[in-house]
Image (cartoon, rainbow over all chains, first blue to last red):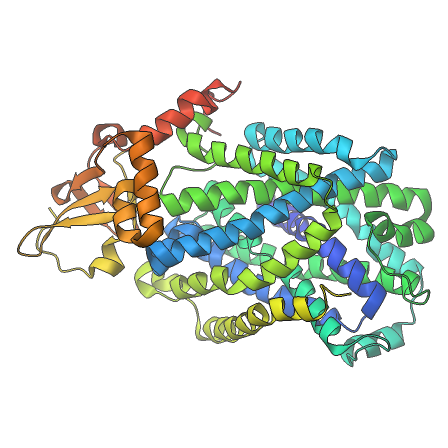
Length: 409
Length: 124
């Protein structure tokens, strides 16, 4: 019974924790401009993140080592360093975007300019990392993030024509008035948002923090295979809401309050309250994950002690990196740069960095010397290799498409 | 203890995580010391050792800043007879304090983390 509850809570946490500022913005933007014609990308992204999150969790459970430990070992000191720098720039940009996202969500509730909240949000993010035990932290924000399920309720209440929705989703076509390059640019953004690299840095390091062993692999798999796809459905519901409300009017989404509007229309004040709680929880939770991920990755590359499960003074450099990353992230947002724009760039650059993260994981999960019996199955290898090809194409296409479409305009 | 074992240097030693007797991370194998006949004598840990392997501008830059910040210190040297296990990580039969491989960690603790309220509490 206790085990069942553990599984249940784990799945709920995975659903609530799936969506972050990148998913919110990308799905809302795409829904308003492309309707359901890009829903397939979320599906492909979810399968990919399930595949690689499971692999990285399995590697962590079997070897007790986080992703960047392996990146350096497999790629060597030079290529590993390049990988680290690129991945950390993307993760830092994501951290800044999440901090801005929390502040914007509070602005929605209070009508006070978001910039005033940025220092407070940054302090709270650091404080939670500093004091809150790992498992409580992950669970609390994951469960609160479930408030975003209100998007699914709103979508249902807005009453889409289910037949035409299914047709659009299963027969994707570029909508009138949009070019092929923009369609593919947003496909890549959506894919980058679903497969953001920090998710596996956090997932694998978190597994080490929680002291997973081979015995926990079954629970890990249930969390991933059930939680992430349901989180993906939530993303599609967000796109569905903006599709129904904004696409007929030809309005583009470029503010967070627009993302919330369909819910307010469909579910009133109570719905809006849920959306705001969900926004804050999802972005705050992701700010914790990205902040920790910078510390995890840098410490693992350099062989330092790291993590929340040891006393802070015993992982002093790790905590120093996390602190500095949060302060710098807050400073970036305080320059008054638009947080939504930071988010858009963070997901496209995530797409560029995808092979850097996923290639070493695939190599190690495939190494029997490391993994023993828990080595990748043939099916996992075939899928992993196919995805790696896809990730490489996405990575190479991202920047040219960004330039060609002037970042999707 | 591990003498005589044939290993692929790049694959089995370089860049592996080193763990001390208490299970604490010491650092990565940043470089190795090899005697005239080609046997590995010691593992080297520290930015000085990384700088040599990085090479180029980046290596020079790292070497320069390490000299500025740490004086003329040598990298931490771990003789191979201290190694007790070679697996997904390398275990050493000394604590990291005994190895002297924690100078920067000490600094971060003294000047920053140890001064923040709650920094000296136990782990979770």
